[in-house]
Length: 161
Image 1 (tube, rainbow, N blue to C red):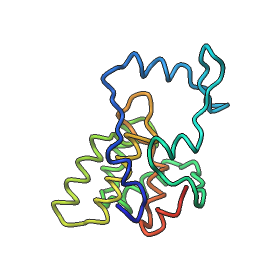
Image 2: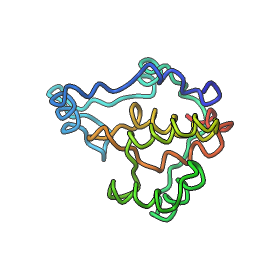
Image 3: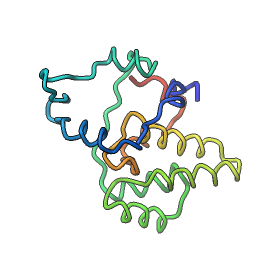
Image 4: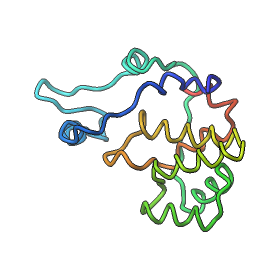
């Protein structure tokens, strides 16, 4: 975990109990400008905010997340989680795209821990962690598979901003 520099995220998680608050912020988010439109004007989250609030490093290489075709998503799941092609297809079809359920990632994590496959467990855990903190979506139940590619080689994951 230390090599990825994401350990501060362990103590940060999204509290999804106040759905009204979540909905209010999501309705005010404008993806095109990466800002929240508030009554005082546009507000954005800066890298300094990320460093201060989440205690994450903000220096390093940028990781370019390329859009994934569904075949690429299934290959990532088969390669990095060692699940069957049928299971990978079923989980992505269930989420209607290049997503997997966070609850399923918890199951993958537990099964990899039970079989002492620590690298695979770490990849599942880290993807789940990102899905609950940095890259949470409106549903707070899915994570986009494009982020799994950043954990292909855990020794390089810590070099990303």
